[in-house]
Length: 318
Image (tube, rainbow, N blue to C red; front, side, top):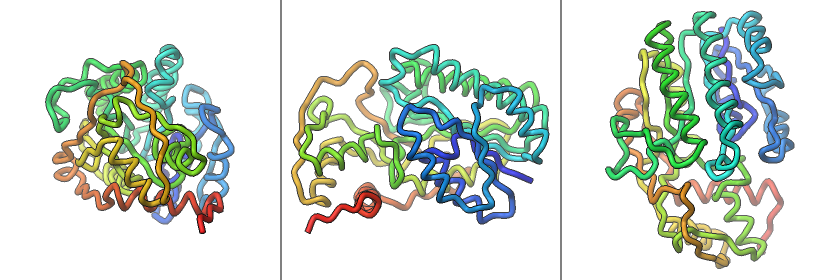
């Protein structure tokens, strides 16, 4: 009995792997250590893994490798987190995002259904809602107008997931993540970029003066939701996984300013076409079906992230 985590060396995946390593199932991590951000950070995550975790370096698009993994290991659950990330980065890379995120996911689903996997959890994104007019976002709301190739590739995966459940009976739960942050976060994302900018007196851009709102969800809460989904085969489901309390980017920065004790140098620019005005999670379904109960407020989560950053990089502001 084994759980396969794709993208398991990355931000969410490494947190998940460490949590699952203490359980009864063995854990297999598949990651290609892509250079979208510094692979050394992912290798550092792997170096801190429990020795029981098997790490395989490879790509979800490699059909022979995927088949070999399922054939050699008794994989009963899959947490598919591997993807090309980044909404704005996807604008000029539509074919790459379709290839990795959509085609790679279908390759994995094919193997899962052939090898009778009991539970397949597919990571998706709140970005599929685009500029939804109704808030908070509910799973039943239209999500067919993504603003960039990244969410378009994820929406396509959601539709493939439904077809694989319909045709082959594969249990698939699609989790739409909302703005996940915390220790070991991606360096290209706002939570770590903001710390770096404040510490080093570098300007940081807030779109529309920081009026955009995001539903920040702490990584430990997200991981708990993923584990709950792995434990609960439910046919086919799409479930929002977010805290449920949006904050403006300006509020976000003010929390960091208070924690760090320095003012940010903020520049305002018009929001690009890739950016929705708000992400706002209705997590009722997650609470009902997964027992999801996010515990970490934004202020607490940013404090945890700042404390980790200080320890990781030896920051002493005395």
